[in-house]
Amino acid sequence: MKWIVGLGNPGAKYEKTRHNIGFMALDELARRHGIAIKQSKCKALIGEGVLPGGKVALIKPMTYMNLSGEAVRAFMDYYKVPLEDMIVVYDDLDTEIGRNRLRYQGSAGGHNGIKSIIQHTGTQSFNRIRMGISRPEPGFAVVDYVLSTFAKKEAPLLQQSIEAACDALEYSLDHTFEQTMAKFNG
Image 1 (cartoon, one colour):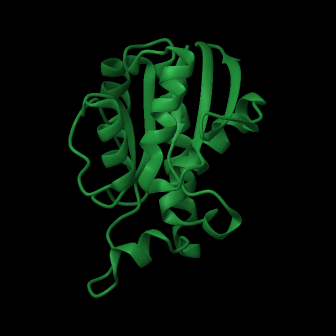
Image 2 (image 1 turned 30 degrees about the horizontal axis):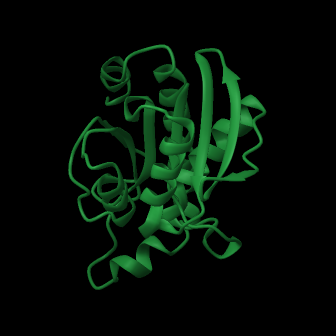
């Protein structure tokens, strides 16, 4: 079973913010395959289903971004799943909006959700899809920027990024992550 963790913050207040692009991608993947992400377990909302490539668990940590690792660790321990089967989907300031970057290891790069996952798993080696949100204009605080909503003009790029992330996730279910990276890191 592959398990996909989308990062974001719980609650309507954060629903459409840049920091919640990982949740948005999971919601789209769930919509495509008729999976309900509703089961409250392991400090997260979880939805399980079977896609053409195999069984999958979609996980949205409800711990708030900075404690995302708590939900990842709880899921790992409860289900006894290997870290190699996890893919984390999250926002990336260093990638322009509309683009995604797939990686299988690396530092947190200042992302507190990833920092928490590294802390709770004890490794920087795990599959990830970094969804671009671009950097804010000079003088705009990063914390305010990531908690702001996308501009109307960014809607087509946001949708393109979400669709591409879902396509990559679907592809990864019956291909190696290296093959997925080769195909989707265009």
